[in-house]
Image (cartoon, rainbow, N blue to C red; front, side, top):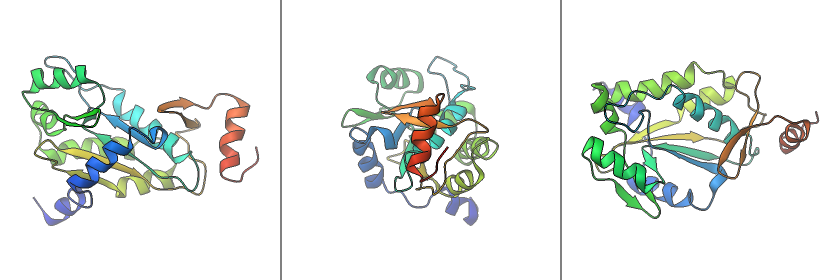
Length: 201
């Protein structure tokens, strides 16, 4: 592995940091999102073509919480025991339970796809890069993506730093309603988000 690749993938998050984020995700619902991975949870499951798009919309929604708010998306974690059990059966790994969440990791997905962890990480990075996410947010998120081996399971952490402007995906505006990502479809919702950033509509 080249030094640049190593620096890009193995940077800031420690196992303790990941555990702390997982626990915080149970309380601060709007600021955190957990995704089990890129693959459909079936035997021989293929890539979910909507997954990266869902994550991009969630990045946008978390950024729109407000200019003083940050958040994270962790890939390789589920809050459903049924999903953790499916992963154990399909991939033969033992999920690590943290609070009410289960770390299933993403190393198993790279293995199932027959690609290196670097290539798997690049799939997420390229998907975000090619998205319609507001450029300032997109570039910041890409430069803050991180991978932690997390007890051999592997977790990708996507950090969303506070933004000074409203963020979009193309022409669409997304927001967090509790732990759900929703399209801002009404004038009242759009005005509410704009107000957080000191903008009038």
